[in-house]
Image (cartoon, rainbow, N blue to C red):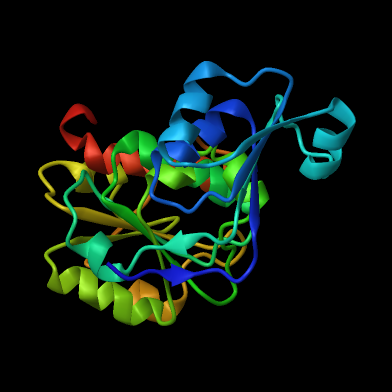
Length: 244
């Protein structure tokens, strides 16, 4: 399988994120630890022939660049994105399409939820959107490494390809006539399409959706943080028979 690649190296900090990284197919260049390394981590690194180096607290803090590291830092020479076909052809509870999420913290939180929901994969655009960075890896608690993440040049064409592969596109739109809980009932192979933090779905992406759905909210509440809204909508679509 071929992959699209970043051009910059990536640091991953924290014990659980580094464990997730080692369990993935992503390339790992080196791991630094403070003092004695965790046995499970050492075994996983050894199985992949990744060198583990013990360094002083000051050196590790300098390598981490000020990030919270819990005594462990790993370096990737690059992050390898999946091809769109690997997402559209995969099995899973849903597909997630993100139309221009720009905040790394939001993207990381969304990817963590996507992993928990068992999605087949996530699709993001190459331009005007966050890609995988150290901040994204941290915010996802390392779960970015357990999700198929495709980065595409043309999101509209990617959505069309998902439809051709049998996925039903559900655009998350404030004020839509139907709720995500209603749409989720009985819908097989949903692909949730979520817009950017500020402007929502772009017109061409919205037009390509099979359904539009909203999250019901109490009077006086106009919107939710995009990562929170995405989490609610994902579970509404993938566990629709439990909604009401």
